[in-house]
Image 1 (cartoon, rainbow, N blue to C red):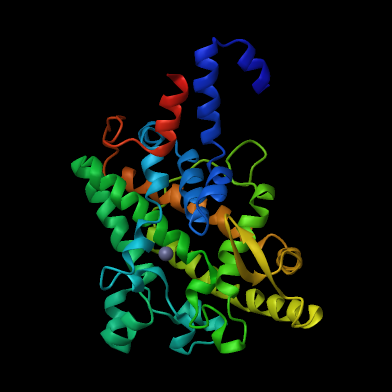
Image 2 (cartoon, rainbow, N blue to C red):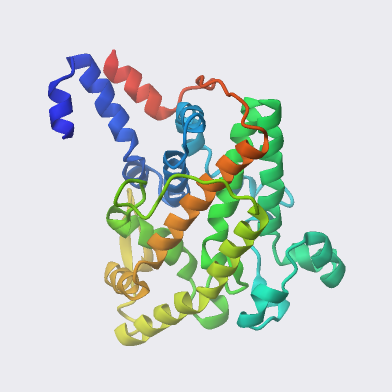
Length: 330
Ligand SMILES: [Zn+2]
């Protein structure tokens, strides 16, 4: 189908179209060039694809910027006081049983602060509340049609929401230190996507599990449901890693794995493969759910702002992908 389309195009248009098509494979390109942050960028990129027009046209025209800045929130963690706590919530530190957590945990931060104290709530992470605050900021940005703020708040909301879809962002045992499973965070969040993203279904379509974004009236509940679902998956994330470690033996679990131009000691590819199989698509499902939730929230914020008309123009400063496109065309 795509080859057929190419035959119908003039040479210069063929090239432009090909580079645009390359954009749909940003996940693959980023995995080759930007280790570690690639999942966030893939999720933001795919979330754009879920948006209906005219919001899709606006976001697509800023696609390069959105994908490039999907990880800004992580970069701020080391320089901005109070940023790091926005990326997680250690729900297990509140002492609820799993089956009562969903019913009893206070969704409202004021209520949580009065029950547990500001400092404890802050120390345990404020991920869901940060996502909600950023949602309100995005609505306000849409209302005032402030393009820079729309983009800034959209990428930050996407980042915080994506983080909350990672089970290990909802537990104090976020890197396995409490259970002798150090490194499990990057194994689940980075190594598995890097090794298996080619098999993940991350774009909306007829046969896809991802559908077009829909309006969500209760965005607060959506964010909390995503967080609780992640937390309920913590057990399986830890259990299967421990089980495979036991089966493989201490000497086979780790290896020096090539990453770009360097070699890093991490879980071996064989270990990652067995873990991926045992999790039975869990990472893919959480990425898919992230994409759907982000698309729904971006769309809902725009609806809540009164569906303002937005100009689809290019932000100042070209991205690397745009520069490559321009270079090839020339
Ligand atoms: Zn983060």
